[in-house]
Amino acid sequence: MRVRNWQSISLLSALACGAHASAEEAGKQDGFRIGGLIVARLSLLDTTRQNNLDMTSQVLRLNGKYTHDKFMGIFELGINGNDRAPSDLAQSVNTTSETVAVGGTPNQVGIRKAEVQYALFMDKTDAGMHSLSLGMGRFRPGGADTYGGDTVTGAFSYTTSGYSSEDGIRLLYNNSALAFGSLNAAVAYSTAMPISLFWGKASGDDAKIEMFSPVGGNAPSISGKGQVFQTSNATGISDSRAIVVNLGGTFHAGPGDVEVKAYYGTQANAIVGYTAAAADRSTPAVYAARDIAYYELSGGYNLQNNLKAGFWYTSGEFSKVKIQDPTTAATAGRKLSYNPGSGPSDNYVQAGLGVNGNSKFWGMGHLATENDMLTFGAAYQLYMHRQSGDGARAAGDSAKNDVKLINLAAGYAMDKFRTELNFNFFTASNKVFPKGSGGTSTSMNNIYLMATLDL
Image 1 (cartoon, rainbow, N blue to C red):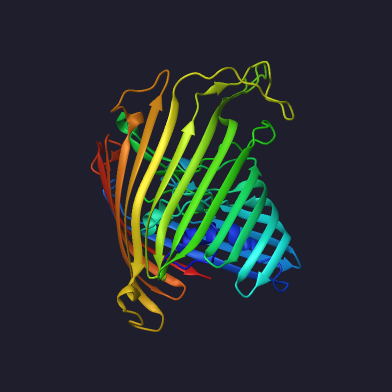
Image 2: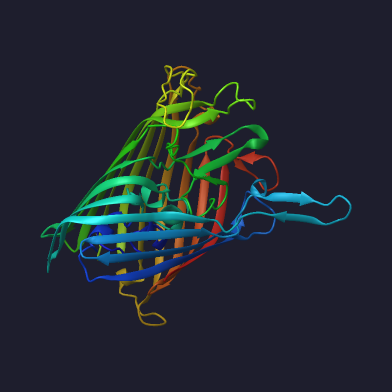
């Protein structure tokens, strides 16, 4: 994959999805390189709250690469800021005085990448690099692209460029020396399959919007409850493993390039929950599992890095819940078996269209200083949740919620610095959004300012 500038996706997503690009670094001059990224988002308006607005996301990322002959080591750390929900805090109250001490663990560090790669085959020419590499460790798989402002490319990025990481082994192929463009592919066998989903829940005072966001990443969302979802990472209890395949290509077309990406992942008996063991150990923990398949596809046109437009589509298919046979105790090293599934199966779908670009498209560059420009973005996304089979909920129920998002963005960029104002307008078929004045609503609006600096 070619190194991309901010126009392709946000700087935040660009660092996250360098799975294929890293393989091409092998074979270059030995040495160690280090970099990083600072991300900040300041909430300016949020209809779900009336209290003081604040920093909704603060992120620091540090990454490094070491190359030696055909070997490469890659690491990346993500450090979250002080965005913590009250339920996540450790609280102590001194009842003999008016002192209330509330503390937590806000500055959490996550290992986003820690991988060793070896180039099995490598051919470097003036036209580019052709390579086949083997990697093992923790990596971020990379998937479909999104187009638009920071909201869809960064803060609410529901593509693998924004997921949590995988631990496993993979084979990577890259060819940037083709006359018509470039191709890349990867096949991974891992302990977990990261999935990016979105849904709404309408349940009285518990109404909320749920969003999955990346480990050590962007935020617990701009408004709502951010979570991380992985199919299974319980390597000591389950032999369930995921297979993930990535394909991508860039094809020259007129003055620009056509960009296409596809992703497929599958995992059988992925653990999704459990019933805890009895306190006296008289009964063991019993696990619940589902068979899961996940798809992504995106396509777009890049006009000389000054204007981009494209679409994206994702789908997550979840089988009926299967409950572990209690005779197969969840003991480390012991194979689990499950009874037939029950209840409904679920399908989550997301589709979007977007565009982003900069003022150089109209010949307006070098506005205040060299290499600066104005930026813009717009996107539309639709999220859908459907159930089928036994126990499926009727249309219109909260489990069949459709959520629509319109994102508009305008900003300024100069070299490795970027700032952008994002306007977001959400509507839903059910009352999934809390209102700052109380109750719930079918709509929610927010405005926030983001800034990134690539180190």
